[in-house]
Image (cartoon, rainbow, N blue to C red):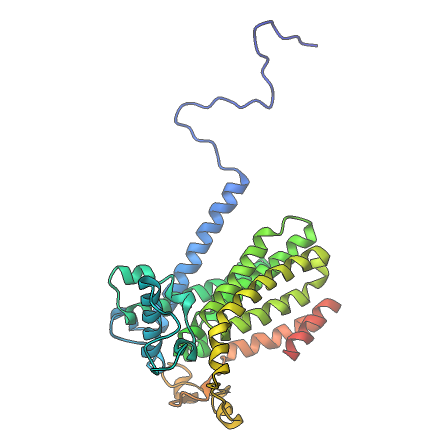
Length: 358
């Protein structure tokens, strides 16, 4: 049995070992994972941006005066400009300078608040409305691809699946057609909210803290709603589907956390909806007939004529119904998913049947 000498410390096997000057300690597992995640995120965003540039070519060569699709581009560029002007000058936000003397005229369409605010630095640097619109389009495609990658990666834990989901979610024939409307192109919140819901279920199942996934879920949903109610509604429905699939993992604790996040989103949505409800209350409810609505639907057999591969075969010049053929690869993958889901056990069959119903 060894004894320590008085006045002298005994070396402990757990004591820190002195390193030579200038030698850095090796990063721990947490630091390594964080660094890997940052590199992975940067790579995905970079590849998404590259794909966006290729998809919209030659838009990037003239961001200040060219538009990818002229259907709604001028109006949405004006919307972004008006919102930014109102926020920076303190002027009326909802009483836009259209349809005078009506009130709440910004509520006649999508407010794009969730895009106008983060684009403010470009305005301060002198970028015009068309430039900001095009930057938002490219960033929207890239971020939507990254969001799709995140969802596929979180659910499957495989990079290959994440890449496939990201491409399908942001690009393809439907992505090209929907690029005529900015609020349809920028739908990253849908995928991020779905990934957050899945993450929430995982954490609830393990009994770990739920604050981070709830905050991410709430923020993604609220932001997507602030861009437009259309993708916001898709985001909410997607989250509900994910929560329904993972309801056993959620338990009481996870379910209450999800309800709390959805309640916050509901309050935010209600506040944003007030000007729209006032427009309806004033009698300007813009009622459309069933025939009008039908003509604004989608055509799953057509694509935009500009597409290199499918354009000569399935191309159409008509904006409406929206040409929305999703591509042969997605049909094949849907079939593979259907067969795999039906053969993957009771829970897998339930999820597959739910997907078919939706």
